[in-house]
Structures are given as C-alpha cells and as structure tokens.
Length: 398
Image (tube, rainbow, N blue to C red; front, side, top):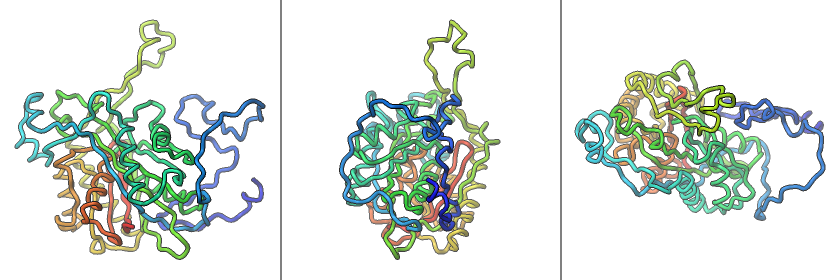
C-alpha cells in the first residue's frame, strides 16, 4: 500500500466532498454494536484455512476508471405493490374521510405490501428496470447501494437484492437516512465514480413503512405507502461533462424527537429471564406533524439554494423540481419559497403517498418514462425527514 499512499489526493469534486483514502487499518463500519466489528481485517494476522467460494460473472469492463471522471445518470426504474389502500378504505379504520385527507395531504391512495411480499421484491424490479433502461447487464454493476429504513433483514437487504439481480461482481450495502436516503445515496455513489473506484453504481431507494404504522392512528396512517425506485449512475467518459452539478447534505439530531421509530427492548436482556429469548422490535412511527411541517418548509428551500450555489446555478436554471413526496402542502410551500412555478414541480403523491426513500426515484422514473423529464434537463432533487436529515442535489439528466 505504501506507493499508493504517497500519491497526491484527487482534486475536490464539484459536490464538495473530499474522497477519503483510508489506510489498511481504518475501521470498518459494519453496523454492529461490538467493538470487534470496528477492527479492519487488514489489521489482523493472516489465518490459514479454506476460503469461501464466491461465484462471479465475468465482466467485459475493468471495474476502475481514471480518477476525475464525471457522473452520468444512465437509467431509472421503479416498482410498487399491486395492493392499494384508498382513502375510502381508511374511513373504515379511523375517523376520517377522503375530503379531509386530500385537503391536508393531497394523498388519495397508497400501495401496500401484501402478505408474503417483500421489500426486496420491489427493489429488485426497480433495479432490473433501471439496468434495462440503461442497457447495462447486471454483471457490469460494481456497487448496489440500497437506501432504506425498513429492510427485510435486520442486517440489511442490499445483499439479497444483489444476489437476486445476478450482480455477482458488485459489492452491496444499505444506507439508512430515512426520506433523505436516496439523495444521500446518489451523492455517496458519485464519490466512488469520481475517484475512479467504480464504473457503474446502482442506487435504490426502497421502503415499506406500512410495517411501522399504527393503522388506528389517524395522524400517521393516512400518509405512508410502500415502493421502490432506482437509478444507475455511471462514470462518464474522458471529456464528458459531470452531470451531478452540486449537492448539499444536512443533519440535526436535536430534531430526532419529532419523528422516530425507536427500539423496544431492555439493555439487560441477557440477564433477564423474562426477556432473554424475546424477539426485538421497533415501535410504530411517532411524528409531531406540525413541527415536521415547519422544519420541511424552512429547510427544503435552503438546501436546494445551497446545492444550486455549489453548481453555480440559479432557480431560473431549473427545469424540474422533484421533492420528497411527503405532503402536497409542503411541496407547494417549498416551491413557492423557491419561486418555482407549480407546473415545474413533479408530484405523484396522490397515487402513492409518502414512500420515504423511494419517493424521489419513483417520481423521477415516472417523469422520465412519461417524457416529462428529458435528456439534458436540469433537475433539483431534495429529501427531508427523520434524523432529522435533509439533502439536495442538482443534476442534469442523462
């Protein structure tokens, strides 16, 4: 590693994040509580023994490219469950009605996972459709990045999607940033492409928050649906322009109390006979709606303006605004503050409700397939939600 460590770092990407070059003993973040999970395998003595055989599909292209490559948005895809829960259906569950829901949220229907249906099912379909749109085989994918807060498995779902996709050459991991997850995933993917590490990175946003809803709580059950969306990002060729023009990522953990789904369990599980063999669980989503609304209306315009500043663009340069589909009143208020006309705001909220990390790629894919968003269009995407976290990116589609 020493010759590589002496090379100068790559130039600062346009998005503003300096790619890191960890040394061989940098800690690995494996999502485990044990301190042993923070020890890099490179720091441990070699141990002889059989190696796990991993099937890989031959890929016609080298995994790495020259550092300094730009980013292309090569294709998109999406998938939602066939099962639909309408406002009329909710009238039978809680004290509400269609007019009340639509006037406060803009939502008319939401798609919900059926019995036996998994998040991975729809993440897979969205990924397959994105690859088909880009004309890229699964064997050429170098990284699968799944933004989700509701995985099928406590250890993550990205690897399951990678296996079912047939992307045998790809690494895969989950990213948890709630409704900002897809935007943060796109920015993360760009760093792998710009540093020359990878050529093709598949970013999936997928959530099934219906699993964490109290369906007798009128304040939350009217809002959420399930779904998945995906975009394939590619390293641009020599001389090609970089189509990720700027970004802005933000977090404020002080606001976590306003929107959360907390772990239910005791810290002394091993020593408590009553809970020693119990199954862990998370609470249903709890949300202070008025505080989240005020946060979103205040934060979204600022983060979009900050990302535009990095891109050296102005609001008038935007062709489309694709916000996290949380509430139509938030979309309208944020667009008004930015000065973006209503006919330039993409919204599919009425059909799907709030699908968390899936909402932006789902709306983006539908707009691309409808011919609304075209090659070369400048698009602002912005997510906001639990954490609290919020993020924006300015991209040129294609």
